[in-house]
Each structure stands twice: as C-alpha cells, then as structure tokens.
Amino acid sequence: MATLLGLPRELRDEIIRAVLYSPPVVPRNVERTITRRDFGGPFFNRIHRFDAEQMYRPTALGLLLANHQIAEETSQILSREAPAFAVDIAIVNECWLWPAWRLIPTKTKTNSYIERLDVHLRLCCTPEHRIYQSGFAQRHPLNLHIFDPVLQTLFTFLDSFTVEGAAGDLTFSPKNGIRQQVEWLEHEIRVKRLNFNIITVRPPNEELPYEQVSGRVVKGLKHLINDPLYAADPTTSCAFEDWLYLSTCSLAGRYSTLPTPDILHHTGFVDFYLDGKLAHNLDLARYR
Image 1 (cartoon, helix red, strand yellow):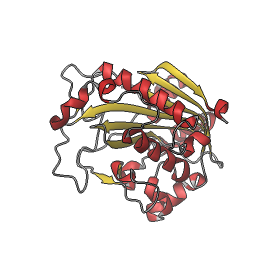
Image 2: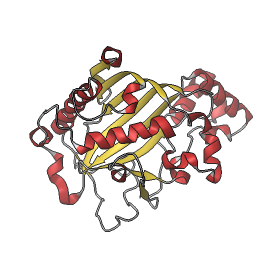
Image 3: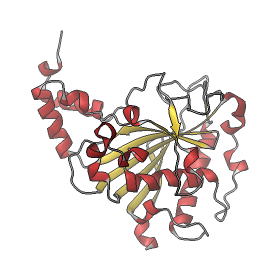
Image 4: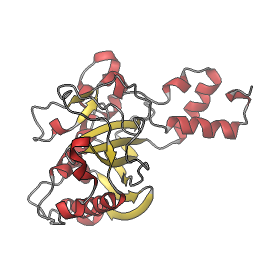
C-alpha cells in the first residue's frame, strides 16, 4: 500500500496543499451560536457562528502533528504562501449569515496585512420559505439608495473580521489559548484583495448536502426547521451577484446615507465571481 511519504515530493506538495485549502468537516451535533454585541449595530444577531472549539480549526494542524518530515514540508508550503483567509457563508432565507471558515492560516506572519480574503456565498432557504429560491431580482429592485439588511449583515461580519480576525467574539478571551493563536490579528487588518464568489450550482433535487452547509441547529432557535436546506436557483444567484456588485460600488462611492463599511477603507481590490469565473471587479483606489 502506498504511503504519503512514498509519493514523489511534487505530488506530496499537491496533496498537502489540497488538505490545507479544504473545508473542515464539522460534526452534525455541533450547534451555531447567535452573535451577541453591545455595540456595532443591530445586525450582529443575524450572524450565527460556531463556538471557538469548533470554529477555530487550523487545517494545517493534523499535518503539523503527523511526523517530522510532513510537518517540515507543510511549514515550507505555509511559509511560501501569502497569508490568506477563506470563509463559506450560507445566506439563509435572505436573513441569517452562517459562516464556516475554510482556511485560517497558522501564525506565520507578524503583521496585520493579508493577501486575500475569499468569501464563498451560497443562497439557500428552509422548507417553510422556499419563495427565496427564486425571484431575487423582482423582490430587490436595484435601488442604489436602499440597502437590504442582507448587505448590512454581510458587511457587519466582514468589518468585525478586520478588527477581531476569524475568531470573532473569542479574540478577546484567553480561553483555550485562542488569544495567543490569533494575537497577530488583534490589530486592524488590511486586505489586498477581497473576493466574493457566488455559488450558483445546486444539486438535482435542490437539497444541499450537510457537508456544503454544516451546523444547522442554532442555540436559542432550535424550534426552527433548518434541515433540509434548499439552494437558490442559478438565475437568483446571478441576480444577487449583480446586486452585490452595484451595492458595493455605491457603498464605496459614498452614494448612500449609510457609512462606508470599514473593510472597504482597508481593501485594495474587490472581485466578484460566479462559480469561480470573474464577473466584475472593483478598484477601491478610485473612490479615495
């Protein structure tokens, strides 16, 4: 039987890189927690996170603990990679944000600059609200002076990332060493490139597998039926991408009475993708 160490180094590097960038597997008994804040606006309670013990899982940890050679090769790959974060966000019923961090790099940098923040967005709905599977463009006309709470909730989440890092509420708590693990993120983060990738592909039966949207029970909201979840149709997802692009342009250009989100002050470029294919891009320097 072939082993990892028995493979050529080039192939081994590709396998290690695939592990580093793969979404973590979250057990079915893991519950989400409503984000609580005494500051920062009214939209935090729409963000349902995982607790620290479940959310903060560096994907490199298993490789670093495997053996000396694999740990050394993993460290070499991490040292060559620019610091980047990736998060999957399910937007449920056009109301709640369910983030699940796909990639949180280990502490390889000592500054608060990251090369890339990838935000993978998937629109979905619960069985009682299947109206949200279609018709986004009809329900949300492109009025650049009226911003849907979905937009404000999304940027509330991203703004909190620039201050607190991926650990969210738990950055300021020494519990289980979380503070030490993300210490380099305790200063305001600057992002070279923010990528929004809207996922339009959906299963034939429209039901999303648990692996694609995990953690379907929310503490305090256990009476809600969040399983199964149904994916939005591709037309709706495409309309959402166009709306998000135009709304971000409006926020960056200060064409609204709403304040510009902090993350747009500290980001160089914003790219908008549909299933990994570039649809729009935005150079924020033109608005400064």
